Image (cartoon, rainbow, N blue to C red; front, side):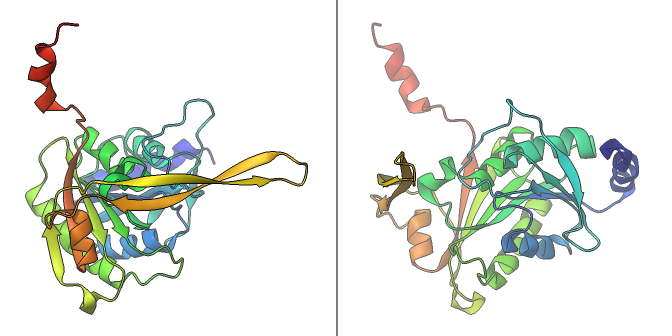
Length: 270
């Protein structure tokens, strides 16, 4: 059956529902434990559509696919939930969801739960957060969720609790257009977390290095490695909150203009 034949009943069913429509995506792929837990967290809040990459897309940032075709396939990954896999990036997933599957914008977009931190400057590389930022660009209230645990069998109990609570708050209060939320959850049990902190993005950077190796044919190749260094010790940052067992919530925007430099640059004599 051609893919488009799935669309009319799905489109009209969501259109007629009185529940909020929640779009769920991620960058760890549709088979990741994190997105399964996010689906469980959102079930009580509205109707759900999942559109996620068919393979891991971590570190793709805000990339879109323009040099190869994009493919969508219906998925039975989640019982009773409409879901699709996409051959592209998280941002591709968002675009296809809006313009091809739904033919409209959802009431909420949630991305994750990512395996690993997206605090501080990690937000720039994150496919998880780029999906949320794309939602913000489209005027959709959007949230990216990340858990500070790379283990494939990580404990998502706390993530589900806070994802439900924060998503419900966004549905009730909306978000200022052009913004989204970057939410990071400390590793550990729910009982070990001290609460939530509204934070600013901390200043940190990757001190990059490369592991240089040779393949069996004598060719050289590299694995990117490195150490994440925090240079910002402020107690109002996401890094401080996470180190002290708080969930960090950073309001994030896609406008990267350095507004404070505009007047200075106008005084320069180029």
